[in-house]
Length: 238
Ligand SMILES: Nc1ncnc2c1ncn2[C@@H]1O[C@H](COP(=O)(O)OP(=O)(O)OP(=O)(O)O)[C@@H](O)[C@H]1O
Image (cartoon, rainbow, N blue to C red):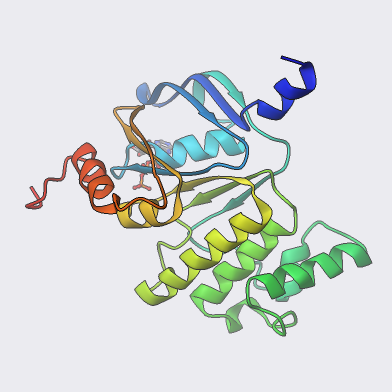
C-alpha cells in the first residue's frame, strides 16, 4: 500500500491495551479500539463502567490518572459535556470564539451559530438561553474549531425529551455536513441506535459488544434487544 493511502485509511482513534485505574481499582482493563475517520460511534455502559474515563483519556484530559497502553487521537479534538460550560460573563458569540482571534474567526463563529439555529443570538448572555439553546451554542463552539474528532459526554442528558429529539436531528445533520469522527457517551440505548453507525458496550473494563448499525435496516428492534441484553436488561425489564 502506498504511504499516502496508508495515511488516509489510518484510524482517527487507535487504542491499544488502554488501562486506567483509580486507587488500585481497574476501570479500563486493556482496551483495544480503532475508530475510522468520519465514523459516528456511541459508547454505552452501566453507570460507573468507565465511559467518561475512556472519553477523558481520548481527550487527553486525564494526566493525573494511573494508566498504561497506547493511544492515538487526532490533533483537532473538541469536547462537549452534559452542561454547556459557557462562560457566564461572556456573550454567546464570544463564548463560541473563545481563544480564536480575527475577522475570519468571527465570521466562522457567526456561521456556526447560524448552523445550530442561533442566528440573531450572538449578543445574548448564556443565562438568557434555554438548556437546549446553550447546548446548541456548545456545539457551535466545538464546530468552529473544525474538529477531526468530536467527543460528547452525555451532551443531551439534561434536556427534556422533545428538545433531545431535536438535538439528535441537529447533531446527525452537523455530522453529515462536517464528517468528524464522533465518540458519543450515552446511557440511552435508543439515542445510541438513532445516532450512531456503531455502538459499543463497555463492561468490566472492556468492549463487551461492538455492534455495527445498518441505518437503512428494519433491524432497530433487534439492535435494541441485543444492546439491552449486553447491558443485562431482558425484555421483561429483569
Ligand atoms: N477522578 C476519579 N477519582 C476516583 N475515582 C474515579 C475518578 N473518576 C472516575 N472514578 C471512578 O471510576 C469509575 C468509572 O467512572 P466513570 O465516570 O468513567 O463512569 P461512567 O461509565 O462514565 O459513569 P456514569 O454513566 O455514571 O457517568 C467509577 O467507579 C468512578 O467512581
